[in-house]
Amino acid sequence: MPPRSKPISDFLLTLGSSGAAAGFGLLAIPLIAIYFSESEVGGFARFSALAGICTVLGVLRSDQIIALASDDREARTSTLVPVGASLFLALPAFALIAALSSSDEGASLVSIVVIGAWIPISTLQSAGIFFHQRRGDFKRPAWSKIIRAVVQVLGLGLLAAGLEGTLVLAISFTLAPLAGLLVLGLPAFGGGIDGRLSLAEVLARRRADLRLLALYSTPSIGLAQIVTQVPVVAFGYGFGDAASGTFYMARRLLLGSMQLVGIAIHQVFLPRWSRMRDAGIPFENEFRRLIPACLAVMAAVGIGLVLLVDIAIPRLDPGRWADLGWVSAWLLPAFVLAGGVITTRCYWIVSRRQKHELRVNLAGSLVVLVGLGAIFFTTFPNAVVWFMLAAVIGNGMMIAAALRSAGRQIKEPVGNGHA
Image (tube, rainbow, N blue to C red):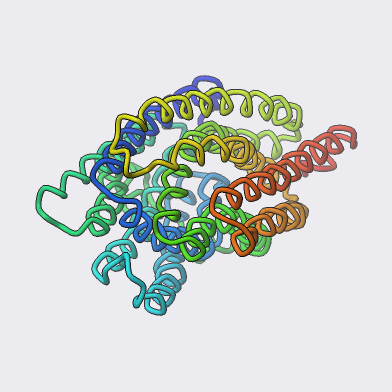
């Protein structure tokens, strides 16, 4: 049995480490703004966005079975599943898309290869984090995330070696999860556990969960990833690499901070609520209380970041990044709600209502993508505004549906949704 959960202390530790990692990540923003042009960042951003989409869709959400594992031996073997999926599905998909886009200016072939290496490495780090958190160890994952952020910033120092700008960004982002593995190790081959289950036995045990994750959770989070990443690509093709780079930097500024609360809740409360469900204990009230608190914290953090950007931007080269301040301010409401959507995912998984989640997220994502269509009919400033309005409506729909579903579960007889 996993150790008894300490949800508040575990959540604070996870939130604190995510906050520290986000803090180090924020240090990269002024460095990137000073030493890289919008076009350089835009060229890197478009290919890294494609890598992110391929990773989410290719892993098939199989990393979630690590947190749902019934014992340590099962969890140890489960770490192999998402890593294998990234190698056999996600990486080939990215290689194909990158090959079709190789004539594009903005990222060299070497940069694309380096970005491709990020796919299995980041998946391996994610699997290690889930493994240790499932065992009740939140300290090593915390240090792993902090080290990843520090190395990501230090990697930008490769500019001194005279390397191409997009290649420096690619190496920096790829070395980061590799460094984070130093404190996690390779759980499938170590971890201080006697023995491990065969992969076939794990797949047999988790057949129902894997089926739900592959059929419903993967398309659902894949839609979310597409909604998050496609604007970087779309604004680049619609308005050029400079617009793509500006949108990427605003997204990096806001989404990294918005996600930290949602991800902390997901990583701490997914195994906790899974155990509560298995014991027949309702968890929906706890979920409903977390959503408003999550949104309030993220809104406060986001406002602070936008004000910080408004102060820092005039101190940078006035000829570059002039649009970053107002783009960040307009996108803030959409990204606050995007962080709230992340918080709802663990509810859908534990309640085993992923099929309903997929329908809800499909509707919300379509609204966001319709708003993105404004790039074909208007100018860059107006396109950002229309996208923000659509994203607020779409993300709001997803959060409201999860709260409504949880409310209905509370009113149903005990055990109906927790068998």
